[in-house]
Amino acid sequence: MLLRSLFRLAAMAVLGLPVPGTAQAPSLNLYSARHYQTDEALYANFTRATGIRINRIEAGDEALLERLRSEGRSSPADVLLLVDAARLWKAQTEGLFAPIRSIVLEERIPERLRAAATDEGIAWFGVSTRARVILINRNRVPADSVSRYADLANPALKGKVCTRSAAHPYMLSLIAAMIEHQGEEATTQWARAVVANFARPPRGGDTDQIKAVASGECGAALTNTYYLVRMMRSDKPADRETMSKVQVIWPDQTGTGTHLNVTGGGALRTAKNRDAAVKFLEYLASDEAQRYLADGNNEWPAVPGVRIDNPALASLGTFKADALPVDRLGRSQAAAARLIDRVGWR
Ligand code: FE
Image (cartoon, rainbow, N blue to C red; front, side, top):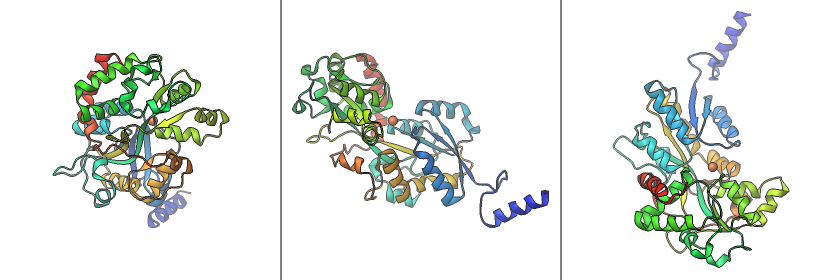
């Protein structure tokens, strides 16, 4: 019995397969803030291709950062994936990432979707993008009255604007982008006017904003694009009914472009298995994984030119995205957080 299992393990080692319960079994400890069920298959594909098992811990961005801080040097984590550029920037400034030199990643991920390069390398790379768009209910808001984020501050929208809490990273990064473009003073005035236009106090997530616009409770709201596409692809008639009642506005197409954020990740300083960490990040930049992020979770590939097969996502069309390097969203994050407190946008 013992001999037989020893033989089996030896055979697996010869075949290059991961041997369970031994030091040779390659595995990767992933801390991920991605909250999308479709990621399961993505990680399974990586394990199939490399033999490296993934042990995943999932939590919100801030909870993961808190955990890494408290684990310190003894953290078992190899890779950190977050769903907001400013949080990635924060992890970087706290020294959690060990910068990477990878020709694959540097060639495939555009400069504006990753951390700025230092002598040591690059701390993190965006792997997929999402845009933050305005949704309107045409029965409550004339379509031609909203074409910019600035229009959410128009007094004509009094009692009609809804958002999730501005303390959420998706909102903070949008506000940080506005600070980068027009300064803190102008953005504060804008935010104050948006708050004055609220239909109700901020609540819920992006999907709740979509539903509230469809129901007419709100005339205009903000959402990330993948929530829209998820609803377009839903099996539930109620979700498709919801989508038939909302209109998507791509903000600032004649100006700085629609706000873009990323999911991204980097190898941690505590990584015991640095080679596997880099291999995993390079895998995320592969055509296969990029396609999977697009087809599974309705995000756009970070790698240019990857062909995707997601008709609902494609139906959103092309748009002018904000060209601001996403690591700049981190730089103005503290200012954005102060600003929302000042104007009472919680
Ligand atoms: Fe999300």
